[in-house]
Length: 135
Image (cartoon, rainbow, N blue to C red; front, side, top):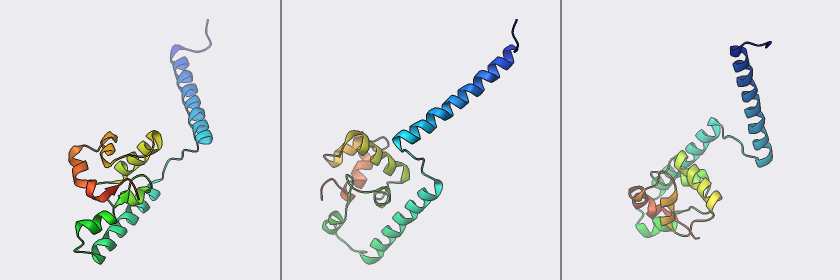
């Protein structure tokens, strides 16, 4: 004879599972220091990237390819806001590039970006003039 009905046991098990999941997530954040970025941080990074792009366009409307390469973004050292200044790279792709760099090490060539989810041959062709891997 049981104190709880089958439905009550199911609810108790569900609640215990949610509590355990909360403990695991809290422990992960504590030990690995991974914080979830807030929407405000994402918006600020996007605004900073947009301002930087607007300033560059305003200051150098007729820059040639050589100058463009000199001002290209180093994907091995740049932060999210700088990567978002590359035309066609948004916050999600910039975050994926950074995570790939952290997980697999520095990029040896621009073509290594093909290993990042969301960047295919067509995208790489569009953005490769804005990217460098060495200073």
